[in-house]
Amino acid sequence: MDTVKYPVYLEEAFSGSFTYTDEEDDLYNFYLHTVGNIHVFDGKIIACDALTLEADEAFTITFPKGEFPVELAIAKVSDDERVGFARIKFNEQSPVRWEYALVEGQDPESIENGIIFGYPVDSGVGSFMDTSGHEAFANFYENDPTALDTISDLLDKNYADTRSWAVWNNKNNNVIYFTTGWGDGTYQSYVGFDKDDKICRLVTDFGLLDWPE
Image (cartoon, rainbow, N blue to C red; front, side, top):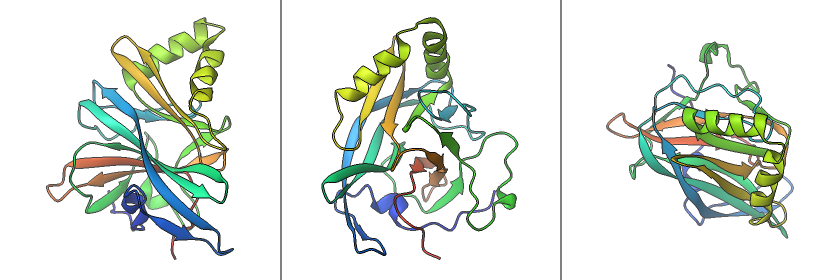
């Protein structure tokens, strides 16, 4: 797979001190928040709209197994806050190269300027889960009429204008939720590899910042 030409803020946005100024001179001050640990049992991870489960296919790449922190890079913009990036941090090494995180049938060579592969969001909430977490939540979602109210209540506990996050736990598996940038859209994920060519990151970009040409 071709290596992605990426901006440094895929990693630096999580430093806790990253700043960005857009074309309108709006200042984005990023801070880091750790939501909790995701449980990865079979190495297959899904990123999707957490409240509709649309486009809920697992990425083709196999990730490390275990428990790993899910972190958010949150931007303070004037009196607002927005989740700019979400990531799973698999180890402490820094990424030296990136690849697109793809699902079955997606070809990176077909990506052109301004066109991305990503998951669609219509609820304003994205997620990370492994396949066991997806199976558990899909069963809850399909069979319990209070499922969406349960997740909304969890998100409300951490809400501030205009961002939130939550963890849904079910026995040994879980789902990590977070609001997505300005809201609805299509959001691309990227896999970072360290100097030993091991997977060290999975990052979803929620489109707050413009990529340099």
